[in-house]
Length: 267
Image (cartoon, rainbow, N blue to C red):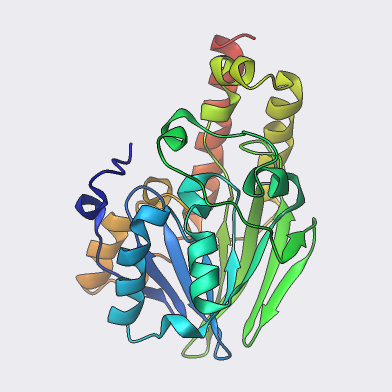
């Protein structure tokens, strides 16, 4: 759980994952940078309290934050989108988020988690609303955006190719894997439709299975063992993140967790 009073304890070193994909922070929720050759794309800016560390990591890698063109969101929770307004105003970057999560980031609905109530969310109006099957294109990036609701109504997953030294791999991120929003206590607290939310996740997992992924990108470090792979990468394993079996293992585990919630946490 993030301690927003002492964000510096979650500082992480930035590094190149593969090709034009970089990890720029932090431990509570991951922020990634893609260098498209025609500007930078950030996936999930993170908490506002952690933005100074993300900016420093971007500069450490030799990039200029003023070159950020797009801010893309896996979903609208504050640990992924809290820094968005500040970063957009600082850089002029355009924002993208799933249609179902627009009410959350503009402040129309309080779909949040208890930890997120301890900090202020600077709401923003998205520049671009994502719909299932949309593509985000900039420079050498062509990112396919697939609606995978469940964690939130507007959760999106992203898939794109990365080419390095003539080799192309398929990267993929599942936009929301947390079971916290499917728990009965959460559903009752926010007056949600349990079968609808749990049913959405039930459909989103097999939808993700349709995608081939060589390089699994986690929007939380624990999903894909970001820091363990970083150590392997720095030890000389250039393919530490290129592990095609990781995607299937992750989705298998996600299905087991969902089955457990449904079986053991009745509404």
